[in-house]
Amino acid sequence: MFVGHFGIGFGATAVVPRVSLGTLFFAAQFVDLLWPTLLLLGVERVAIQPGVTAVTPLDFLYYPISHSLLAVVCWAFVLGAVYYVTRRYRRGAVVVGLAVLSHWLLDALTHRPDLPLYPGGDWRIGLGLWSSVAATLAVELFLFAVGIWLYLRTTRALDRAGTVGLWSLVIFLILIYAGNIFGDPPPSVGALAWVAQAQWLVVLWGYWVDRHRQTLHRSLPERGGETGGEGVYLR
Ligand SMILES: [Zn+2]
Image 1 (cartoon, protein in one colour):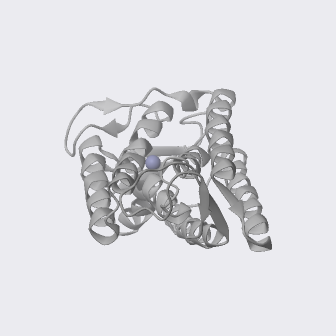
Image 2: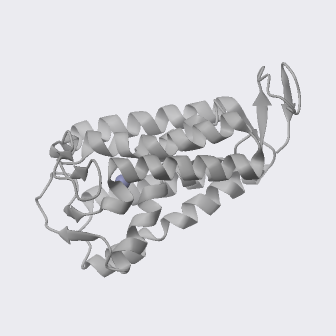
């Protein structure tokens, strides 16, 4: 799962328009942002094995810290708590936590049974959508499209950067996704891990785009909220 996670980030802005798109990308993709660093440190392991699924050549051998359910639940609490402590926005903190958790649920839909329930556990979860390229594309592109649609309903561009930045980000994500699915397998795990670090760029891109868009603020009765009822405010 790749663009589907970013679809969740885009779509979550409809629930918490005060939270930046960059933060929601960071949350929804957090465990995949962590994963390449754990690979480079030798803490987690993956093998490149073309044909292991129809969609990805990656065989996820060992990734309990980034991708076991128990660890992801802990990460969700940690990120939600950090968000709450720094921003004092309860609904935002809850949605940040849920976005972290959504990553595991969507991965469970696509992966082979390789997702551990807890570090060291024998049970592995995965419904195996990756056995079909068509089904994977249908689900992911649907999530991505709905997310973008919600983001477009929630925000509007303040300037050209708000439009061009958003659509170039969307195209960039689709190109990476197409490269992942239809391109050659990565030459080595090290190369894979370093390229995967480029996802941090997408998070920064999310923050940047978001600063160039304003939110249509529809009746969110938040304490200390900027406006009540129908209105527009700037972030
Ligand atoms: Zn993942």
